[in-house]
Image (tube, rainbow, N blue to C red; front, side, top):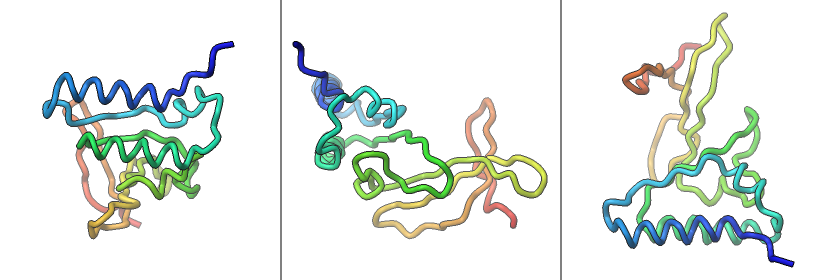
Length: 138
């Protein structure tokens, strides 16, 4: 019987290949989503250690990395591998339903080695991109 595919290792090998091929032009990596990656993993034993080395690989390759991770409001920033403790930053994006209408927001929950506001900031998304409009009014 074939052994299960280790998708974390597969992604790491792919990253190393692309870094070797493109060198310093390969600077950004996005994984959408961490939950989807985990759902493919048959063996989830030792996930904290595996994720520690995965994030170390991203840093060693000098990649700015974005991990998309769905979670319920107010819930911890981890799924299986205590990711919230391993990442350098956590940016929460969501919808605020107060004040009678929906408003998109962005909040920097964690950014290692940086002082930052913990407030929600209203954002506007358009064809031209995303604009931070300022702190949400209470």
